[in-house]
Image (cartoon, rainbow, N blue to C red):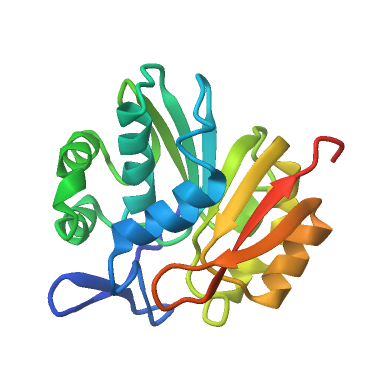
Length: 225
């Protein structure tokens, strides 16, 4: 657990910006569309969904990625629980999350179900979703995690402003905790991030990004890794 909390400023009253990292929590254009492009399509979801599927994430933030994935999971016809583990050092309060998520009314039904049970960290069982948000510095908490994920949402703040969440050692830990043929996706195409993923056993590809971002990164771990 962590005693540290997100320090926010609100741009135009609706867009949360991290005061710690001077970076917005989601796209200024359409955060949900960016999530769907980068993290869902980037990991070939929902096509890969199957019972027991496990998503892991660096950077829980507003919970937007979780809710987009849960919505896609249910709308694809899955009835067993989606497993979702996220690593977050500076959690938002539930009230802050609710305020941020008001920008995306299409996911309000999932947001309401989640926030009705969410207490700010740890494990939460919502039937078709089993989420565990592990609080603390991911450089410490991920190495002690004893599970693997089928795909990763790498969603820390900008590598230029939050380099700690993109370092080679952490990418190595992501690789260790990825199932054979598992994937990762991120909005950034920073060279050192791509090199870190390649060194961690991923086949790395630069593809078209969302909106004004020309490129993003997708990666697949080989079965022999």
